[in-house]
Length: 204
Image (cartoon, rainbow, N blue to C red):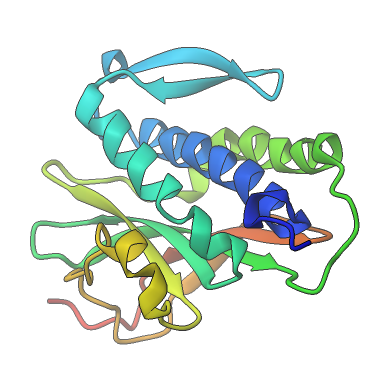
């Protein structure tokens, strides 16, 4: 009898990861000060205090975007999830990038407590990384962008309906990368790093 996706090691890891990404992305948006502090509320997660979006539209955007990735993360189709801050001309100022690797051949039991302990270190590291980030100008915008290793099959087309191609511009030069945190524990590998435009990047 075949196990359902959410009962496999990959499914278990994906569920924990998606919940973590929702908290981490909210923490990044809070850290960058895009909205007033009153748009967030404090709550406990993984035995630490984190922020959750209080504003319904903000909460729904982050929640639905990240949870919509669950079936694709389970199948190992998602390579990166990025939080991109950009100017009115759609040119990125800064990108927080989560690089994912879900081992599809791993078949053993996932120790959720160990996985959560490793992910918790990312949330601890995020506030400490603030000095490495860029100051955002007024009227800056942001979006969640997912990068797929391959296009999903037509059987999962319903799951992809909420995702549209981004019109945010790409940098012409390779970005400057600043690592923040990484972990490798079966079946999940995760890296978090900052990307900033190169000094040689042409000015718009």
